[in-house]
Length: 123
Ligand SMILES: [Cu+2]
Image (cartoon, rainbow, N blue to C red):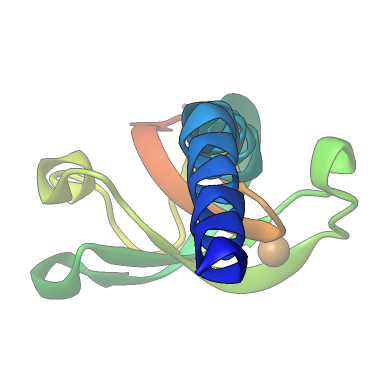
């Protein structure tokens, strides 16, 4: 009987111990969670290019863009998603454009979206 009482009180002590550290543990996890979930970071880069293809239905434009040093990109041909398809209104193939590229970084993931586009043909 005395042995049982001892183990019960041992259990009670353990229970108290976990009750006491439980909230601290939860708080620590919460803090770790907040730090671990990298908030998305965005930056806007201004670049220039030439229009190769326009697909307004899919909010996509293919550009030959100049080198973008901030991204370590060489000049190349690539498709871009535009934030608003109305940006493609009045734009045609072989137009020279200036575009604002929103770069979103979340952890190791990066995504790119054109948020402004302006035709800059020389007259
Ligand atoms: Cu590119």
